[in-house]
Length: 290
Image (cartoon, rainbow, N blue to C red; front, side, top):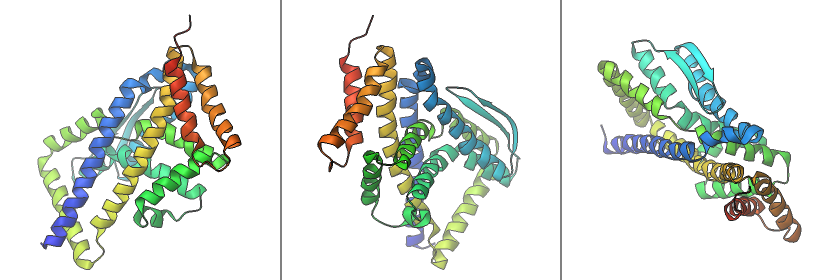
């Protein structure tokens, strides 16, 4: 195997594992600090917690498991958590299915957000994911969403806030994958060998699937970071505002500050950022109401 092929495969593997690990850690922090408390915020909290659970379980687990040939046993969706019971075959197809399903939320949910954003802005998603300067894409995304000039901007903003809290593999997902691998070590070795052979053939033929895959993962991860930052700011205002009985003040700041900035400084590109910062500062500054 050539040095170039080894480097390409190693780079893809590093990005795959690294992105999945970072997203898992960030999701756990948001889940404990904010997400589980959304149920206390009534309808407003449910507007963000329920879509996150549905996206994680259905888009992240159920659909990938079904499409990869596994049998769905049961589905449970609650406000703050869910569960999809899957019966995986004890063969290579089961190994493939459990891998796709276990890591599905980390990659399919950011891709879902990217697909929505690309569709609403008439971008070619294949070109958007694999070409162009990444920093320009992210700043363009921030600029598009922050303007809040059109309905599509609000839809993309809501999608970012609602999808980000569940766009990663949970501890249960990872334990399930590790357990399957431990109980089926031979299948895991065969599965890894198949991937290496496929990647090497791709590299030898000049298609460089690993480089394309790495580009998609990097783009997906960068968009996830954007989603996470926006989601954390919004959920912080909701949760802390509810705890301090100042939710309306926080929401009012989130709406009024961007409107004021757009009115006073029409050319300012990022009024949303001002609104999020303002709402978080408001709920931090206010004392608990009696």
